[in-house]
Length: 358
Length: 130
Image (cartoon, rainbow over the protein chains, first blue to last red):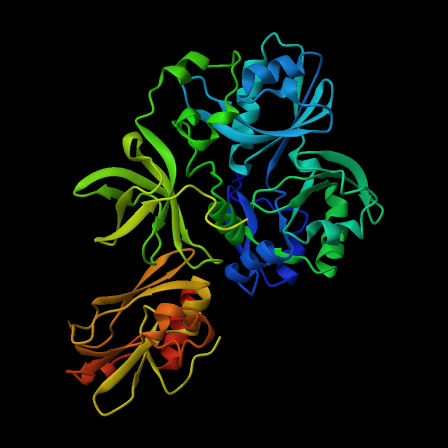
C-alpha cells in the first residue's frame, strides 16, 4: 500500500464498479475479486469460451542497454540469450541464497531491450534487487508499471473474438510470441501468453486506451473475470503463485519448474544447487469435498509428511484439489495420503496437474 | 438483500424459523451468502446429535473461506439438508428456502424468542458494513 494508506487503482476501476464487481485489496491495489455472477461462472467461461481480466496491477520493468542480455542471464534463472526478438519466456529471479525474489515473464523486444512482468506485490523489491545487481553491467532499469495497462483475454474462443478487432494475423502469433498491433485503432503490444492453462492473449496498452479496449472486448462477448477466478484457474492448471507455492525460501529445483533453471552461471547458483530437496512441490486430489487450505498438514499414516500451499474445489470437475510440499520419497504419482481438514483426515492422492482435461 | 420479516436472526448471520411446534429450521442469511461468494462445500451435522445454543454444528465453505455455522437454539438435530452435498450453490440461490441447512428439535423455547427480528439483524449488518 501507499504510505498514505490509500490503495492504488487501475485505469479500469470505474469499469469494474459499473459491472458491479466486489472489490478487494491485493498487494496494495484495489482489484475486482469477482463480478455478480460469481467465481464459478467466470471460471467456466474461461475454460469453455472467453474471459477477460484486468491485470494492470502487475509490474512492468524495462531493462535496456548493451549488457541487458548478459545481465539478465546473471539475474534470472532461464536464459534470455535463447529468446529471439518478439518472443517471451517464463523465468524466475534468484535471491542469492537458494530461494526466489519473484517469478516473472520476460519479453525480448530488441537485441538489448527487455520487458519484465513481475508480481504486483514484488515490483518494488524486484526493481531494487535488480538495480543493486546491475553494478558494472552496461544497462539500466526503468519501472514502467504506471505507463501500462494489462488485460488478459483467455479461453478457447479468444483468438476468434480478438481476430475480429485486431490488425495482426493471430494464426502465426504462436504461444510466447508478441507483436505490435492495434485494437480498433488503439496501439497495443499483443502477446500469446496467460496464467489460466487455456489459449489466450495478454494485451499491453496505454492506460488512457484501456477502458476503450476493455469495453470493445466485453461488448464482443468476453466475460469479465476477477482475481478469484484467476486463482482457481491457475490452481486447476497447476501453476504456482508467488506467496503461496513460491517464496524467498523456495528452491525451484524442488518444483516442477526445475526446467526454468538453465545450466549457466547465475546469481547464487552454488547456493541453489547446494540445497537438497527434502520436499517436492506436488499436486493432490482429495477423495471428498472440503477445501484443503494453505498450511493444512499432509499425513502418511500418523506421520506429518507435507503441507498444503493452495487448495480449492475445481469449478469444472467439482473435485477438491491442492498443491503442496511433500517429502521427496513420497512424491510419486498415486501415493495415498491424507490431509487434515478441521481435525478430520481426508484421503488424498498425489496427482500431477493439470487437474482438468485440456 | 432480502431479510424476511417472519424469520428470526443471529448476529453471526444465521436465520431460524419455527416450522412445527418444536422444530426450528436454520440456514444462513442472504447477506451472509453474498459475503461468502459461491458456496462450494457444506459440512453437515449428524441427525440425532445433541446441540447447545452457540455450538458450531456445520461448516459452509466458499472459495474465499470456511465459515462455521452456529446453532442459535439448543436441542437435537432432527434433519439435515442432504441436497446441499451435491448442490451447495442452493445456499447462494435460495438462502431462505432450498438452502436451509439443518433442523433442531427445540428444548428451550425462550432461546428462539430471544433472537433478533429483521430490524435488529439489519442493524447488525449496517454496523458491519460501516
